[in-house]
Image (cartoon, rainbow, N blue to C red; front, side):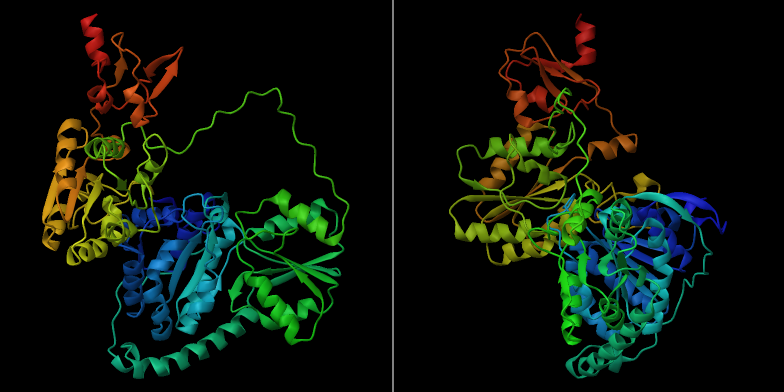
Length: 620
C-alpha cells in the first residue's frame, strides 16, 4: 500500500513537503486531481498518480495547466473535492479560466496549488503568485513548514466549500522540497461521483450573467476577509516594542534569528498564513504598540504594501520597512543568515557574522554547468541541424524542457525563449522580421501543451520556418511523466489513448513533414537539410526515447564506446559536449560508466577512432 494511504492516525512519517501536501489532500477527502507537471510541484502529482492506481482517487496528467484547472473546476461543480496542481508559471496558463471561475464559483471544495520558485532553480522567472489572489479575488493560504503544508489542505477544502470559491495554496521551493516528520491525521471519505445541476443563468458567463456574478464574488471576498481575521493561520507570538511581520518559510528564519540575537523579549511576530485577503484588523492592532516594524517576505513587497496602507488608514505613523537596498531584496531566496543580519541591522542590534570556515587549503570545486545527459538524443539532433545549415544565417527559437540546455556552448542552439510553447509563435515573428532561416525547437510534451496554436498560425500566415519537434517519448525534464503522445502500455497502464505527433502535424496541414532517428547522423543531416530548404512551414520530428526513460523501462541496449589509438586528436567528438568525454594527459577519453552507446561520436569521428568496447576486446 502507498504510504500516504495509511489509515494509522497519529503515525509519524518522514515526508517531503510535496508528499505532505498530497497526504493533506487525501486527509481532506480529495476525489479528483489534475496537473501539468512542473518543478517544484511535480512530486505532488507523482504521489497522486501512484495513489490513484491503488484507490478510487481520480488523477490525470492534463495537456496543460489550463485544462487541468478546467477539469478540476467541472468536478468541483459536480460536488467533488478537486485539486489542480501546477508550478507558478503554470498558473499564468490557467489564469484565463481561473479569473472567471472566481465569478462562477464551485460546489465541492477546490484547491489550486501553485508552487513558486524563488531563485529560479528550475524556472524562467520568479513571479510572486500571491498577486493572483488580489487579481482573482480568491483566498490565498501559505504554509511555513512541511507539517503545516499537510494540515493546510483540509482547511483549504473546508473554507472553499464555505465560500463556494476555489482556494489558492501558494508554496515555495523551500517548502516543497524540504523534508520533515509529519503526523498523519484522519482521512475523510471521498465522494467520487457527483451530479451536475443545470443553472445556465448562474453558470454560463455571458455579460448579463457575469455582471451579477461579480457582485457575488465581492460578497465572497468580504466573507473571506472575516475568515482571515479569525484564521489560526494568522497569529501573533512574543511581546515587545519591535514588530516583525512574516510569512511562509521566512517565519522559520525569523524565529531562529530572534533566538540567535537574544531579543525574544523585545520583539513580537505576526505570522501571516492567510495572506489574501490580508487580516486588516489584526494587522492594525499589531501595529498599535510597535515602535518600528520590519516585514520579512521573499519575493515582492506584497504584505509590506498592504501593511503600510493599513497604517495610513489608521493614521499610524510607525516606521514600516521591508524591501530596500540595505534591507530585503526582491531577488531570490532568503536564508537564515541573511535574515538574521537584516533584522540586526534594522533594529540596531550589535551583531558580527560568524567567521567563515577557512577553506583556503581546499582544492577549488570544478564548475559543472547544467548539461544534457550522456547519450541524449537532443544532442544528436542539434549536431545534425548544425551540419545541415552550415553557411546559413540562422535564428534558433527554443522552448521549455531538457533541450533548453542546448543554449550553452559548444552546442549554442538556443537564441530566444519566453515560455511554454513560445518557440512556434516567436519563430513566425522572426521569419517575417528577418532574412535569416528560422529553425525552432520544441519537445513532445511542450508541443501538446501549447505549441500547436503557434504552428497553426505559421501555416495560416505562410511563415517560412522549420519546426524541429524533439520527441523523446516522455515529459523528461520534470521526471518522466506521461503526455498525450506517450505509449502508456510501456508502463503497463491500460485505458489511455495515444496521439501521433506526425498525424497531428499533417492534420494541421503542414506541407512538409519528415521523421528522423537522430542517432543515424548522416541520414538525419540529409533530411533536415531538405526540410530547411523547403520554402514555407516544414516540420522535422526527431524521434528517439529519452535515454534515462529507456533505462528505467529496461529498454536501453547500448554498449559503451572507447577512443582507440587511431585518434589524431582532432576533437570533433567534443563538439557535441557529451559529459561521457574527458581529456586526460592531452588525450580524449570516454568514461564507460557514463557512455550509453548512442554511437553519435563514432559517426562524426574523422578517423573512425571510436569503437565499441566489446569490439576492441575482440580485436585484441
